[in-house]
Image (cartoon, rainbow, N blue to C red; front, side):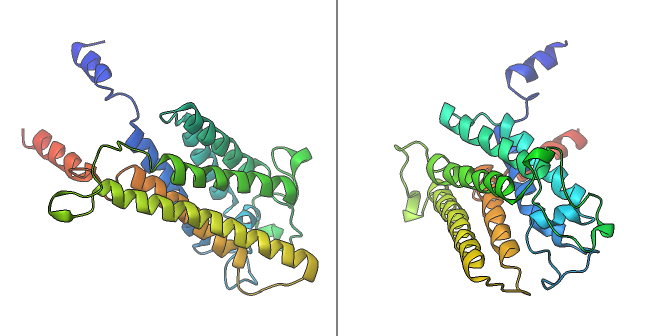
Length: 255
């Protein structure tokens, strides 16, 4: 190994940075509902959407769902955070994210000839079903909500909440977003829980409005936004990483 490589290793330049990892998780979360909803080939009774994000497993977008969930899960598992509690939360969230992909919900599918998957089963056939799938999904989102509300808002308490000239600091702005995102995830879970209870006991169905997909998408977008903010893609401290990267490229190409 050359001296230059040793220097890079000592400066942690050869290791995937926390900011990069956070942004990859965030972009993955925000892109998931959007990518799945683009040009689905399978006919739908829910205004062009599937009833839920999970139901895209049984469409031509099924592989995209599985791949993105597994990537997010792997990134979450590899994220250690600053404390054991953070590591445990992201580890559990990562396992549950992969569980959502590998243990699909059951579905009575009339158009499964458009699917790349079978209408029943998954990697773990013995666990397949709505109960296990929902347990994985709810735990996944709940862990991420706790991360956003409890751990992302932590920082140096000695830093003032306002900058010079009375302006709110970037950290305070990020903390507000973290709390909004976390509580948005929890509110979405509560709304979906109440809807499923009402549907079970009263048979209510809001078709063609895809209420499950909508609130799942809101929760996932909130999760993604929270991690993007934590990765300082938004409201960064100091110079934005894109600006820094651009300057480095200019220095390289400019000699």
